[in-house]
Image 1 (cartoon, one colour):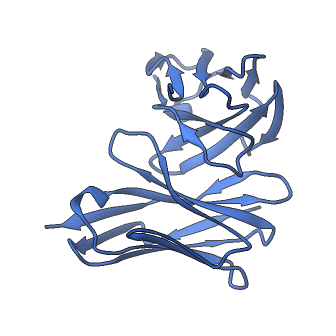
Image 2: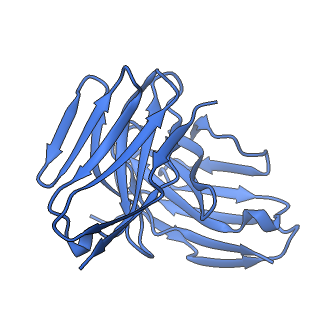
Length: 113
Length: 112
C-alpha cells in the first residue's frame, strides 16, 4: 500500500510569509502527527490530529497550526515565517494514535530567507 | 516539562562489535518507548518499541531494555553491520497526554 506522502518536498519562503504543507496518510490511518526536525533540536512534536480534531499539541507558538480533513489528509500552516522556522517538517500517520507505530513521510524541507 | 535525554550523541564501533544507546525520561507516566532509525536523507523508521509492562524485547540483532524505576531505556545492537550506520532516536509517550518526546539522536558510525 502507498506510504505517507508529503508535498511539496522543498520550499523556499521569505520572512513574514506564510506556508502550507500537506500530508496524505496511509489509507486507513486516522491519526496524523507533525514534527519539526532541525540539527540543533532534533525531532520536536508539533501536534496530532485524529478525526479532524487536534488531539495533542507540542510547545510551539500559535503561528503553527494545522487541520485534518474528513479523508484524514492533513495540512499544517506556519504564518509570519521567521528564519528559525527553516527545518525539515515531517508528518507521520498511525492507525490509532501515537502509541502505535508511526509511519513517516519523506518530509518537506522549508528554507526561510 | 517532559524531557528525554539520549546518550551518546555520536558513537563509533567496529563492525561486528555491539552498540548501546541510552535514554532517560522525566515523565513517570510514560508508557510507550519506540526507537527510530533515520538513514541519511531518508525518513525515520521504527525499528523496535517497548511498552511499560515489559522489561525487555528482542528482535534478531536488536534489543531494548526498560527500567521503569530508574526511568531509562536502552537500545542494544549486536554484531553491527555497515548498514546499521544511521541516526537513532529514542522517544517516550506519556500516558496522560499522549505527547511524544524525542531524544536528540545518536549518530552511529560502523567502522570497517
